[in-house]
Length: 142
Image (tube, rainbow, N blue to C red):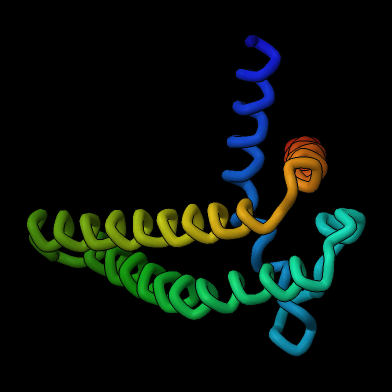
């Protein structure tokens, strides 16, 4: 029971990192860097590759649009903080930033769920291990 719980926890924490991986599914023509080492050795079938590309395309424009809105809202918030704006104006802009961050997080989560359905349990586990190793490397680089 404990082993199953730990495995489930590890899988969930890794899948939450999967949103970071999704943009790498883009090919060079799409502005991405290709599949990358993260999915290179997962033995994806051609159908899985096609399905992953479809997931990326489905969420990419929404995520890019939301990121652009978020950048604009954050810039506006910084300007308001430096100006003589009222507390209410600043609070309203802060609320907008939070809403956009939540929208982006939801889009990432939904894309992770869609991606999860495409991978086999073994592929999910292998990806989870790679993502965990990648997170460890990032911590060492800091």
